Image (cartoon, rainbow, N blue to C red):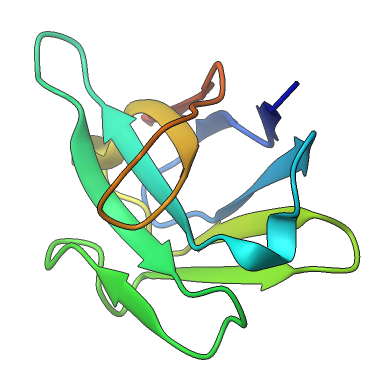
Length: 116
């Protein structure tokens, strides 16, 4: 069965960095674009960014562009979210999902908290 397992979240100070990972299994990973979403307390789940199957193209929410970078390693069935210059408003549960516009499987999420 399809599984997406995120890791790498934690508590970080403003201005810090984290790298999230999402390991996929149960499907041909290299055939699917992948996306990251996040959900802050009391808010709806929001788009963070996406990456094409070969990693050549990415798309980001404006508020994270130039701070966050999505990449993937198809040999490891893993998609990454490098987050730099983190801000308190980046605090959220972060989810990886299979797809670009049609999102059919989700991981369980990893918590990112940005606080001093």
